[in-house]
Structures are given as C-alpha cells and as structure tokens.
View 1: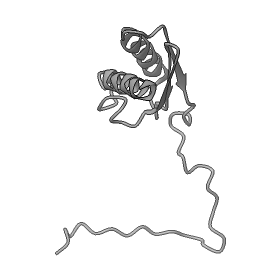
View 2: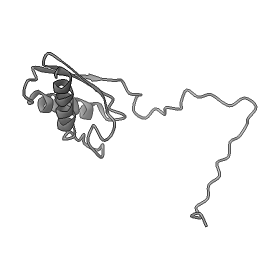
View 3: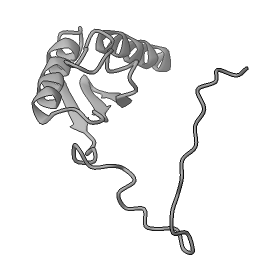
View 4: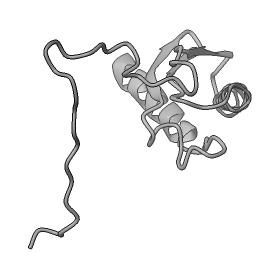
Length: 116
C-alpha cells in the first residue's frame, strides 16, 4: 500500500511540474525532458533538473517556480531542486572533438530535392 501512495505522490508532483514553462523554452519542464528524477522521503521532495541551455536568470526563476508549485501540494514539507550543470552557453558540445587523423577537409553534401 505504501508503494502505491508513493507512486501516486510522484505522479501528482510530475503533473504539477507540467505547469512550469520556462520563458523561451517552448514547453513545460517535463515535456522538454528537463526533469531527470523525483525523490520523495518524509515530506521532502527532491527534483533533479537538467535545464539545458537556459540563461541563469531563467533557471533561477524556474527553480523558484518549482519550489512554489510543488511546495503547495498537500503533505510536502520542503522542496529541494538540484540543478545539474549544463555546458556554458554558447559553447558547442562538440568543442572537445579534435581533428580526424589523415583527413584534411570535410565537405558536407545536402539535397533539397524532397525524395523524388
């Protein structure tokens, strides 16, 4: 019975998180895959958040909004939002990839023919 209650609580928290839409992100934190996990223990909720490439001010506002929304649920004593570090804005995730040995130039070829 306790497992059912715990799952029900996590489902309620996840549902509440679908109401959080960071400015400029184009969707809610759940649909965008930013919520990496939810832990509940004795009224303490921990939300693991991977904010992608959002400005720091938007991340801070999102964390505050998560705290208010989840904290308003019955039985929640406190909310801890753990933000996973994202690569610095403007830095390519491929910046650490070095040259290909023996290859001098790479040429990209594309077609816009439309499959005909």
